[in-house]
Length: 87
Image (cartoon, rainbow, N blue to C red; front, side, top):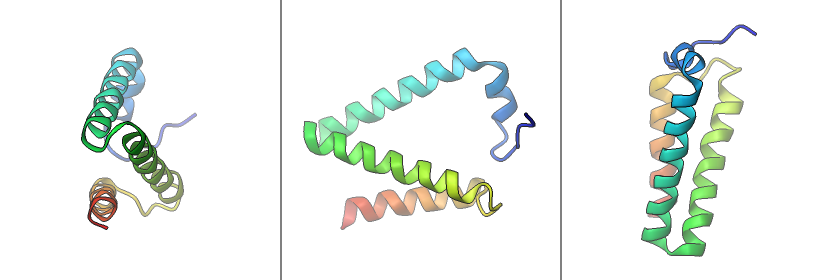
């Protein structure tokens, strides 16, 4: 399969899969720990799942359309997290 280059690290991630899997697992665990520590156990897990589903949905829907690049992904992710926290 031809790997589409969107964020610039896709080829490096494909070459060093073990390193990136460990890094991703560490970042997920630390994000989950911070959310649980800040919001409490139940609300932290729900918050983490909402944020992950929002970001994953944006990636799945907008990358095939060619709408999503580095800056739009960063901006929409930040706006989504701010809306979730401020409302």
